[in-house]
Length: 193
Image (cartoon, rainbow, N blue to C red; front, side):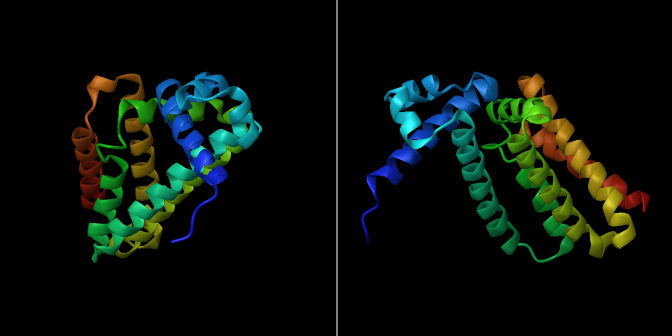
């Protein structure tokens, strides 16, 4: 095993601290000073590794997407039928360790900043596009290409709404309830076709 450079380890440590701050106070409250305090270092050290707050936030979002992508891929490998894959995709959106008030609030803060921040909007579009694309691909064998798009769009809109509800009313919606609502919508959509 080769040794990793200390600079790589320090960047990871700072990214982990930034994720913790991001989940606590969102994008607006995430400052380099808060990240430094959480990491037990100085703002100058943070600036040495990440020149701007945006660069650090970009690292945090890339790391989260990479982990989620690996988990989704592993989950889908275990599914064989299109219906299992659709259900698994919905379940992934509401995993208890992900569908938390902290993640929902942080995601809401990203969405709120999207209008003026192209970097954050890129992540929002990427996540939305990936969800709709996956849903369409898994729905196509079940409902055909023509119907897959509107069913996927309605499911994606419902998922977005449930995440929004989780952010504004953390106690009002559990991961199990959110998943049940999305699966019920899927059942009703498939029955209607």
